[in-house]
Each structure stands twice: as structure tokens, then as C-alpha cells.
Image 1 (spheres, rainbow, N blue to C red):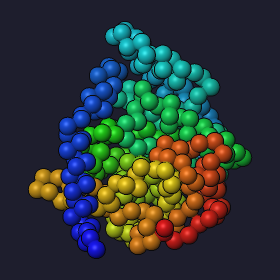
Image 2: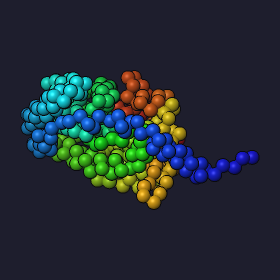
Image 3: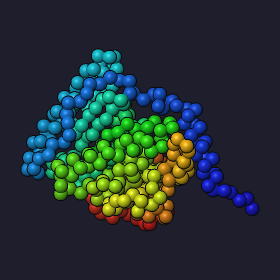
Image 4: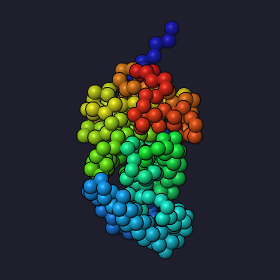
Length: 324
């Protein structure tokens, strides 16, 4: 019989991942952070009475549209035609953005549905390598989730932080998540002030689940949904210190299942994100996510999309259980 030291194996695999991240810094180098953009003029979300929300939001969308047009002009003036074309589409009056910043890869917070009338809100927190030049992937998932929800609901694509490159040392540490957590908490507070009666659920994909894990204490939401999660830097649900119901799902073909679910503390950095959220010891409520891969959670008609929509609506998912 061959005896395997599981802890040593995990550390070895994690070390190999680090070596690959250091040796192949292609994704980080390819990020579009060099595209210039002006400082946005729009500030925080307005604090208004519910009756005034429609007018306040319309004014907000118009102000943010002005920020996007200014960024489009600057990008075009510096010869960045692809970015300018994407921003031109984003500035369409039919689209609804609560905030935008074209600097350093870009930030964008877009609404799908009627936020003023919605009773159920989903905030999508994306994972690594999400920026303006790849924003269409996040937007597509938000659109499909809103279509699955229907009714009095709205979905918000929250690209509110500097995401790490998929193949980078930053993707193996919680540093970017620590930076992002205060911004996510602040956004949810603003959203709660604007829509105090709405039920808010954060849906956190991949590295976005690390962000949600760091933001969880003080995050005033009804539910936290973790999909394709490498871990949330917590040993169990109790360590998240949140009254929200925590759900976790993972597709059977998602490569993140093979990521070492541990934390390796080195002299100057801690690598990895700890316990696997779909394992029984973590204590999350696990829902069926089908047989999709890491990027398939919002595929049209998929079991994962159907169940995420049910969770956002406050309904129990099909096939829920405690851990895998």
C-alpha cells in the first residue's frame, strides 16, 4: 500500500502553481491597464426616497454615460480603437450603468432590469482576468441571469475592483480581494439605502468568491452564493461572520476542484484560499450546478443558472444538501 502525505502533496501542488504563475506572467502583461481614461465625474449613488428613485436613477445613468463618452474620446484620441468601439456601445442610452471608471483596466457597474421597481437584486462579483476588454463575458452572464429571473428583479454586474490575471501570483493570494472588500461593502450599503425593502444576494464567481469572503463581515445581504470557488480564506461558514445564508455550487467539469484547498503561509505572503466551500466540513448549503466547466455557470438553461435564479428569488434550489 502506498501512503500519501496529503498535506505535503497539497503544498507541493500549490508550490508548482506558484512557479507556473511566476514563470508565465503573460496574462498580467496583457491586461489593458495602459489605455488612458479621464477621472470619472459621477460620485456615489444618490440617497433618495423610494418615490424619487426612478428619477434619481435616470439622472445617474445619464451622468455615468457622460463619463463613458469622455473615456471613449480619450481612448480614440490615443489610437485605442478597440476600446473606443466597446465604450461607444456601452454609452448606448438603452444601457444603465451606475458607475464607470476607464482607468487601470476599468471598472463598471451595470444594471439589467428596472432597479427602481425590483424586489429581488443579484450582485454578480466576477473572478480573475475580468476587465473592460473582456467585459462581454460578465455582461452576458448577467443578461442570462436576468432573463432566468424575470419579473420584479434586477441583476447588477459589479466589476468594481482590480481583478488579478488568471495566471499570476496575484491570483494565488487574497491581496486583490482585501483591496476590493471595502468597495463591495460600500456598494451594497448604497444599494440598501436606495432599495431598503429589496432582497439582495451576492453571486460570487471564482476569485470573486474570495472577494465576497473577505467582505462577508458587515455585508448586509440575504444570501451569498459561491460558484467555482477556490476557497474564501475561511475554514468554515462560521468564520465568515455573516448572518447571510451561504450557498456553494460547483460544476462537475470545473477545474477548480483540482486546486489545492489549503493556505500556505510563507515569510512574506500567504498562498491559497483555504477550505473547499462545497465540502461538508465547510458548512455551506450546496446546490446542484450540473456538469459544466469553470465558465459555464450562467449558460442558458443550465442547472446552475436555474438554481442561482431560484436562490436570488428566495426559493430553495433543486438538489440542495450539506456539502459534497
